[in-house]
Amino acid sequence: DGVAFLGRTGATALEDFPHSRHNCLAMRFVPGREVEHCSNCYCYVCDIMASDCSAWSAHCMATHAEPHWREERQKAKGTPAAAAPAPAPSQSPAASSS
Image 1 (cartoon, rainbow, N blue to C red):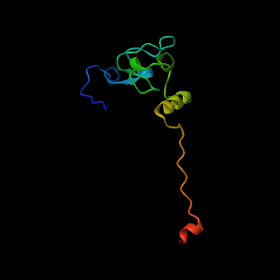
Image 2: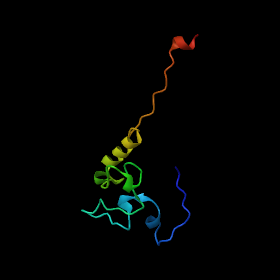
Image 3: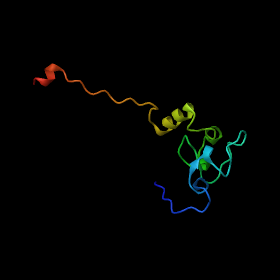
C-alpha cells in the first residue's frame, strides 16, 4: 500500500508525483475546470487517485485551506477532526487503599 518514488523526469516534482488536485501543474486549478485532473492527481478528501473517487464532482473543489474540506477528510479517514484525548481514569481514595 506504500508508494515508492524511483525518480522524476519533469522540471517540477508536482508534475511526476502524486499531488492534490489544487496543486496540479498540468491541469491548472481554475474556476470552471476543477473537475479536470491529470493521472497523478488525487482526491484530498478520500486520499485516493482522483480517477478512483466516486464523489469527484464535489471533491474536486477540496483544498487544505478550507476548514470544511479538512473536516470532510477527517470524516473519510474515520477520525474526528479535533479529537480530544481521553480523560485519564481517576483513582478514588477507596480504590487506592485496597
